[in-house]
Length: 253
Ligand SMILES: NC(=O)c1ccc[n+]([C@@H]2O[C@H](COP(=O)([O-])OP(=O)(O)OC[C@H]3O[C@@H](n4cnc5c(N)ncnc54)[C@H](OP(=O)(O)O)[C@@H]3O)[C@@H](O)[C@H]2O)c1
Image 1 (cartoon, rainbow, N blue to C red):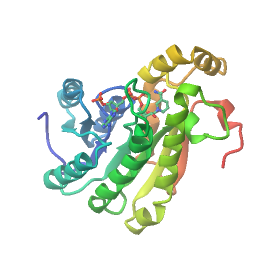
Image 2 (tube, rainbow, N blue to C red):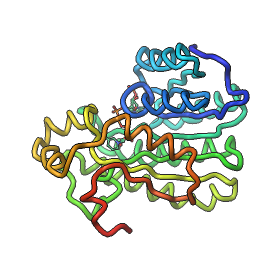
Image 3 (cartoon, rainbow, N blue to C red):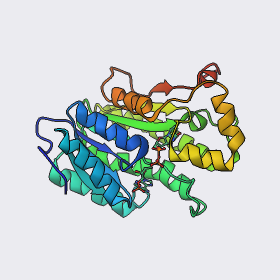
Image 4 (cartoon, protein in one colour):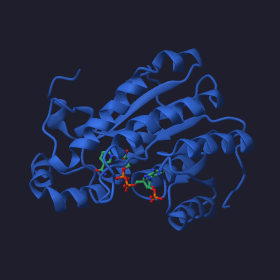
């Protein structure tokens, strides 16, 4: 296991799906502001190891925690390991997401994007004290689901991520009881990501149409907003928007 310094004196931050993309950049940036980052991954142990190693190499603190968040027993084990190793969790970034995988079975999108998110929060909440932060990472296409058209290939993901966001928002009273704040960070299509490359292949018109509204945010810009959401002074349920000015012109509910 890659590790340095442990959680003492630092916030302990778990980033789900941090082996690549937005999660990996978020992990690096949280470590850069002094957090101990727990890098979660599903199967790409080597990549996750490289993310944690780079953090430690640049003087930060990180450890690895492999767990398939769509699997209830794995989530339970993840909570047990964090309890055992740190005794607490200060920041939970709900970044891991799925459903676009070519071999995803029907129902998987709802399982990972809604059910797993709720289970992670239920399992982590007992470890989270007053002032702890939860950030749910989503896309404009999911956040505005039902009010804006969605590329056909992304429809099940958008519906399930919106359902996940609604389910997490419904947990606000339980979070408030513990003094834990939920912030939602919603992004437009993020340039250079695998998801956008997949969409480009399956619905080329949809990505071109987004680009027609202006340049897409970068992974770094989106990750920066996620990290900021772990420190900003905001009421629970606050939504941070990244990119997509045409979405934001629509009525927000
Ligand atoms: N890409 C975009 O344009 C965009 C736009 C707006 C919002 N977002 C949101 O940003 C977040 C990250 O997106 P991304 O594009 O960076 O995703 P990505 O490149 O597909 O990365 C997915 C990450 O999640 C992990 N993961 C997947 N299934 C998992 C599971 N069952 N359990 C644990 N980890 C799992 C992967 O781990 P392994 O590599 O080990 O499989 C990987 O680290 C998502 O919530 C997404 O909805 C993305």
